[in-house]
Image 1 (spheres, one colour):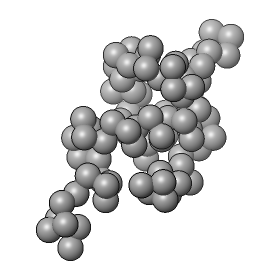
Image 2 (spheres, one colour; image 1 turned 135 degrees about the vertical axis):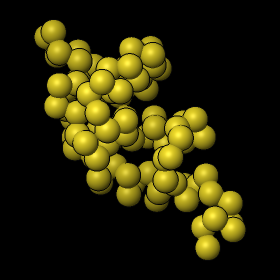
Image 3 (cartoon, rainbow, N blue to C red; image 1 turned 30 degrees about the vertical axis):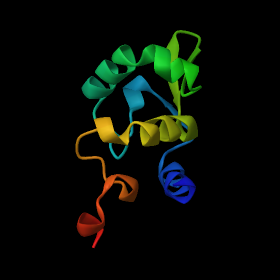
Image 4 (cartoon, rainbow, N blue to C red; image 1 turned 60 degrees about the vertical axis):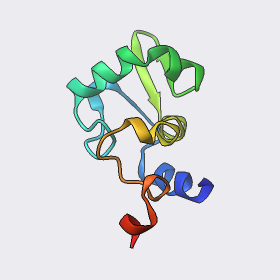
Length: 90
């Protein structure tokens, strides 16, 4: 599972703010990201995946990827070999 997380971490930027949410990072759009940050703010802060720089909320890429990896069962459509059955992986 560790190697799976490292692959995801390589694909995300080091950090970004809400207005510049990368389209290739779940949940893919600023509107959905706004909801995700609001709904999981306390968890993201505890995981070190979200911080505030001045008035801006900033997502820290590697920690966000790890947080997301732990929640893969709750993320519809998230492609991860760790959540697939052996039949689906083949």
